[in-house]
Length: 80
Image (cartoon, rainbow, N blue to C red; front, side, top):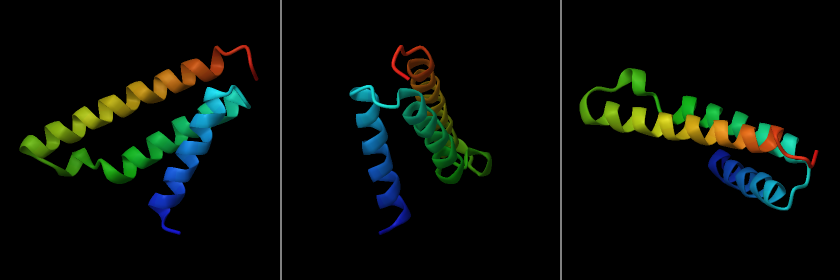
């Protein structure tokens, strides 16, 4: 299985764990780490210019917002 396939499966499993509130902190932290690592690997905005740079920066901002949201859900949840 490819790395992308493994990442997809991880996202589905961790997302479902959050949805059904099983190991919420663990799944939130896992999703946050995954999102940051995937962003570093795939959105190399520091090497881009022009419209591609702006698109990559926008994607980075979205991913950082999602990371913060997932961490907030995970660490403010009453289900550990």
